[in-house]
Length: 133
View (tube, rainbow, N blue to C red):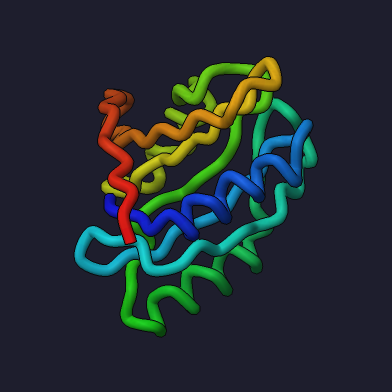
């Protein structure tokens, strides 16, 4: 996925703002390029996992689709570990085939590290995050 620097900055800022809990949200795309970022509330309010209210999820997906875009990525942060999919992430991804998983790593107070993955049938493949305006 190609993402403009201001959209990626919005994801990283969301991760910082919600720390020490995980943040979460969605990225709308068109033709492989991010078009908007949709921050969601982590109803789990946990540093170990995230949950999105079903109504909020439905509303956001409808908004993305009604604007002629598609869900390109689900993002969240890892506040205590590297930005690599956990088993919980892998299990959750089974419901979202073809959607990228952007993870912002904030462990140990280091500079944020952003990585993206495709998770298919439990197999994890890292994909490049192409930043450009």
